[in-house]
Length: 278
Image (cartoon, rainbow, N blue to C red; front, side, top):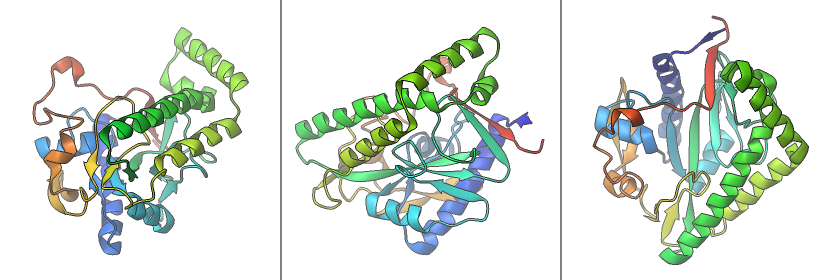
């Protein structure tokens, strides 16, 4: 197998995004690109040159419709709490590519290149209560992430590293397997999903993305943040972005239009992708 170059990975994930976009436009499902993908749209009219994934967000009702209704001849959706050990949906390639990851994330067949789909959930309107409850979600996400290391296989780790690092990582994985069962990991994921949906959607005036919180930030958005979106150029296509994208970006990326220093222009390192037939 041949590893995808960064540009091949970008273009293959873009193919997935195009199919998601078409499906959502036809069904009236609200979505926008988010995080580094949104920065890329705003600042580069495409990918951040060193970015290696695509992220999108959907309001919870649209998200639930999407994971229930999306169909494709070459893509599947890994559903949280069912066949996925993480608190977000992942649309992944089943035809052309394979992924090898430090953090296991799904049951069954090995997936390929993916696009992550995050739900926005209703949260408490009081900023102090929101911060406390969001921190509880963050701590649960950190716990779940550490547990998911148990799910990586020797094949995963062999594709990520060699030599002493491979055996060191494998020893740590075996230790995790003694400590956590797959059932415990799935239950930890379901517990986080319950925490995310504490407030029925639409019952408060604010929303947030609570599932993946690797850092602390104050994304306490108005509930209507995704009610209005617009199309923006991205590579050779157009994607949805929040009409008020500045409000969406500021809590996490206050200086999002500034290119960071060279030492911070790096890709993710926990996953490698390979062509199946090359």
